[in-house]
Length: 158
Image (cartoon, rainbow, N blue to C red; front, side, top):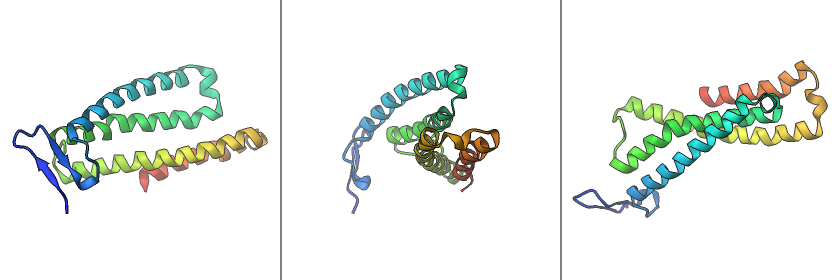
């Protein structure tokens, strides 16, 4: 049975449905502070990976660039929507369409990020121990670029 303690002034909200006894206002500030720092770090690293041609050409950095873009999408969409929920107790736009879009962005960024991290570890192994697998453009396309395209499209479509 869910326990709730909502004061009349809406200053203290404890909802134990999720099993976390942290007030929503505290959750909001934790998300806000960490999201601001995360956004700044993400932009800094992405800037250097994209505008330094040596880093941009490195095959081992391509997965990281896509991961940072996925994290940037999450930081600009789902995290602010979650923060609004923590602050006001309701969704930003209270329509079924918005909630479906929210769920889509949240699920797509979360699952795609997890799959990309898994692929990054496999690809690092390939680049270190089997560099002959990416020695030609054709091999590079099938071993490096095609899996990245497939993972991103699969995460968005499915």
